[in-house]
Image (cartoon, rainbow, N blue to C red):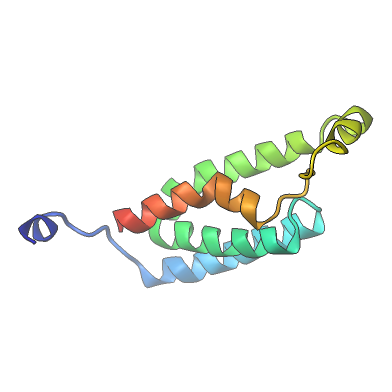
Length: 115
């Protein structure tokens, strides 16, 4: 019990959650319209991004955004040869909630435990 008293909680600004919800909404909608995410992937991204930015701010969010943009761009790069290869697998370039959780779930869990 005394261990928890000695560890200070991170600073928390309530407006950070409001900003996080706005940014997460924009990322989810844009990514859905650009066909980077399915509807379930967009919802999972909204929840995950809201929590990560709401608690951790840009320090925790920036690596996730860079990874998401880079991986989305690379997923759409390759054209016809990639389409042929994707036909052999169940997953495609459009990410669903499971893929969002697999890629960002650990960061979400870590920030909740950190908080």
